[in-house]
Length: 132
Image (cartoon, rainbow, N blue to C red):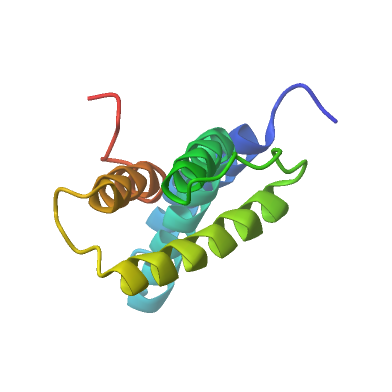
């Protein structure tokens, strides 16, 4: 494993290259300009996922465990394993919400949905930040 640059730095560097060097070179080609912008955006999402995705996912899993009235599971050693763990817990929570008809906006389920959405937006949208 390298210390520097880390994965997020590498993704950001490729994104900067696309935006600063490639995009101006293809500005007269609408399709290539569009594809370059989409690629730049995807690299930004990946960089933010690398930076804050693990922390966000851990918070998500702990909140899901609390809503399902269980002890939080041991943290997964790999990110894909944690993603799968969270997906399964979300399926269980969905079943629980439907079974109990828990639709009140004041319920802890709604609170979880709001906070989870904020964490997802922090990764997918560079203009959204939980730090504000």
